[in-house]
Amino acid sequence: MAENQLIHRNDRVRVEARETDWGTLLGRAIDDLTRIMHSEAQLLSLSLKTLLDEEIDRVIGFVITATLMAGGAICLLAAAILFLREYLMLPWWQSFGAVGLALFAIAIGVGAFASSKPRPDLAMKLPS
Image (spheres, rainbow, N blue to C red):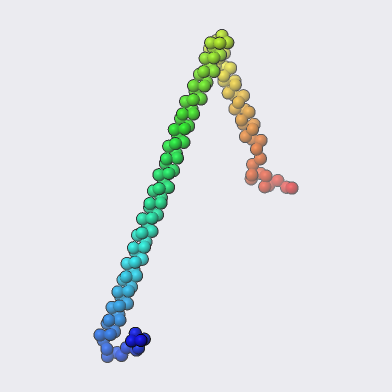
């Protein structure tokens, strides 16, 4: 109730005390806001670091997998060439040519299969 009463101009002690309270409250509010902003910045930093670490791990795994698959493909090609050379008694150039033609035919087949799929952007433009 005492807070709701009017303060007389003569009572300087109460006026200064009330102004000090507002200044203290404003200072605390600003201090609290800066703490909240600092905490949010730390949370954002931690979440971005975690996300970045996960993405780096995923990319490293992808690169290792791709490297191992490329090495395996080279070994399979070498085995096919050696098979044609040793067991079918073909000369080296014919063995390399046969494997190259087989890879070329596989690439054409994959390209034809990939282009036969309907594209979502073209399917929407076609009239019904």
